[in-house]
Length: 281
Ligand SMILES: Nc1nc(=O)c2c([nH]1)NC[C@@H]1CN(c3ccc(C(=O)N[C@@H](CCC(=O)O)C(=O)O)cc3)CN21
Ligand SMILES: CC(C)C(=O)C(=O)O
Ligand SMILES: [Mg+2]
Image 1 (tube, rainbow, N blue to C red):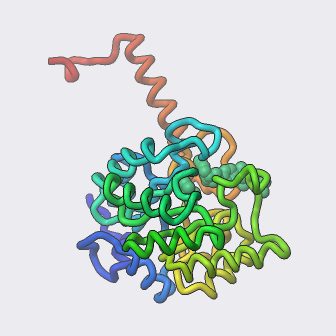
Image 2 (image 1 turned 45 degrees about the vertical axis):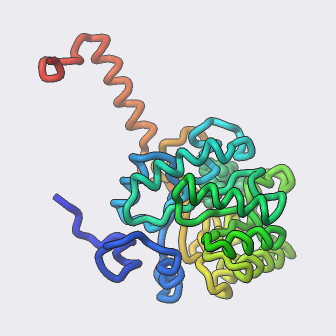
């Protein structure tokens, strides 16, 4: 039986989804006080499941570095590694807005490099928007990309590509640093970003940014008062093993489910139970 409960995409449209979500739908949702969700996706099957389940925006994150390619940090992943994943997610979706995450080293040099990379994401990846990590110091990059007609999602607070400068995975916005978060938020909004990720920002600071800014805030470890929430899908679904950040909630236990399935498959092959007659030509 088909689920008949409205999903978040229908909520964003105010009716059944008949087209892909656009950035203006996400901005309009903020104006109506409607919350929405975002997940990362790096492949066809998760993308089509999240699309059908009503997730209005998917991020092909540079966190593919950790969660696909097995790197320790996000720093090593390249544009050439991410673009095939972006294409897969775009091909597998019909309703969701797909955001491609610009990796470390692909935009820092200046607006020209940033625009060149963003154009590759749009042209070769086929995504609908790009994201980059940065506030005040990357306003010129955001302006250049937006000026070419490419929507930009900014990302402030804890920005993993700067972990060596930030001193590890640490909450941002404590004490005087609250002013830095606010200045970054205003800078990216004024540069033309359509939304901004707030990562590991104190809840009170995220609440204030969300109330002040005209564009949607997308929280990860930023408390309950942002306009939207994003999680890495393998964290949300419990596929990732090992200790997850405190801001993660596991909505499934895929690692356990997959381990059980794998053990049964191996056992049944060993015991001669698989393949059975119905699997045999
Ligand atoms: N699987 C995954 N989930 C993520 O959320 C994620 C990635 N990968 N890769 C890129 C970045 C890195 N991020 C991370 C990674 C670890 C912590 C973490 O360990 N946090 C601890 C310490 C916080 C503290 O010391 O204040 C925590 O308990 O939340 C946080 C964000 C967020 N992003
Ligand atoms: C966690 C989100 C915001 C991200 O940047 C990523 O997954 O790369
Ligand atoms: Mg990222």
